Amino acid sequence: MSARQRLGVLFGGQSPEHEISVISARSIMREADPERFKIVPLGITRGGEWLTERETRERLARCEADGTNWLGEEPGRGVLASAEAVADLAGVDVVFPIVHGRNGEDGTLQGLLELSDTPYVGAGVAGSAVGMDKAMMRAQFAAHGVPQPGYVQLLDAELADLSSGRASRETVADLERAVGYPCFVKPANGGSSIGVSRAQSREDLGEALREAARYDRKVLVEEGIAGREIECAVLGNAEPEASPLGEIRPPGDFYDFEAKYRDAGTELLVPAPLDDELAERIRQTALDAYRALDLAGFSRVDFLVREPHGIHVLEVNTLPGFTPISMFPRLWQEAGLSYGELITRLVDLGLERYEEARAYA
Image (spheres, rainbow, N blue to C red):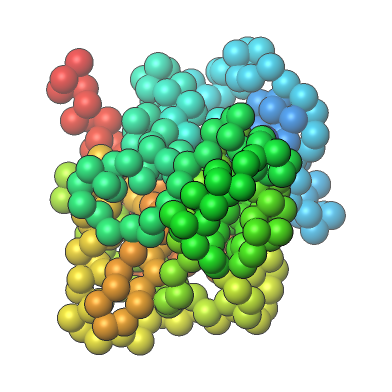
């Protein structure tokens, strides 16, 4: 029997999605094929300290005892500040990064792994960076003809003026004409609907802009399209595949953080009740969006669908959640791929992309 591959599961991090990352990592560690992989857990605290394998295992044992998903608040100076953490990272055969948000799925972590010549799961540097920044993502969609809601991008000074009420009536009116009400206001960089609000009036808009500006210097105001929330999981490199579809029916106005992770009232329908022709169009559009961002490994594509014909891509999540209730693994389970098999497939795709990249070195 050949030696097991050392699979580094890299998780935690400084984003508001820290706990979601820990939950996802614990699921991956539990379900990965024990005959194929030797798991090497590598955690990052909420403050940014990179933990060694030994320290990470100690923190996970504490999480298990406390019933929490928190690796600690210790501030750090990054992986290069810890020789032991560097050695542990260098000792793995392949990494499954499940760090959400900034410095996780925005290309920075992927760049570190590229520089260290370490194979890893998921999108590369450019795809991750564009996928994280919703404004850049939307520009790519527009260039490739991917259908999406209308939107306006706000930066720095104009965002400050609008959120504080200093903007002229004409400026506010221009924004309202561009997207109308209701509209959605969201940080350009972020995930799990953190900082996202629905605005139905000028007063709501000011509050929503202030909330979004807490998380980013760049904010998107998007047309609020009434429709069904449909999700598609995509898997693959040069020849990606689209999964069966799922539908989300949140109890509130939209699928916010509470509905995603804490509200038992959210309905997740797998497969989504759609006619075959519409479902196939959605799946094909998911592949178009995936290719437009030049992605690899895996992603989840989120849609708003207004029957009979309206399909709008809301976003592509290049590092979808891997918690037990996450839609990405559920959609592939519907296609006959178990959670453990999915992990193996993703690792194989990461190794495949690594070997392909070496051919151009």
